Length: 271
Image (tube, rainbow, N blue to C red; front, side):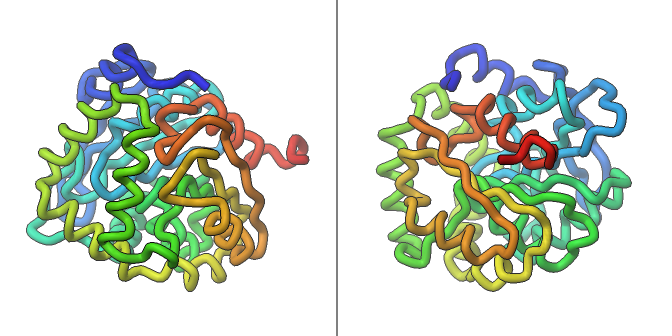
């Protein structure tokens, strides 16, 4: 585990300038000027990995993971509508709306099937896309998937996130502030409302791709019981727990997460 410090913060806030082997693209997708952070180098026949961010954030906090994956896989990190450097629509998309947007985004980049990794709310979006368009998803990684039915309310989720802030690397705070300002607080709150109304279980039972449910051992947002239940619902799923990490495991333990993704995409190495 590497943690997260000033160097990682500078790389995360660099876009649209190149940094850490990553560059920025802007393309029209579904009528929106859409920003994507992606790896710059050639990768031969390696499977592309698409990272889907959570509800209050953007490509920025996924930069450490993208940089860790880039030596082995082409990596793409789109900013969802209204977040990061992507154009802001007048409404906050729900889970189905974001999944439909990603279908159009994949078409714009002529990608698919891909390894789709969603973190937190992004895992809900990834599960919805995998359930609806299995032809586009080669493998699925649900990292810290929300939301646990035991706390499926705005109050329940906010309470768990407040606990999580005490377990996270403090250098992440400037990223969260920047992302909330970009998205606008109303969009974050509206997206949280969409999240707690989304029963991810219905999508999980329809997933056909090989799936990994991954979380930090100290994640209070996604406790062990919920992630075990999420993995049980998917017909072909396994779990990985990263020691020492909390909810933002993709930011603070990028090497461990990248290794787990690579193992999922390399069947001969799977235990």
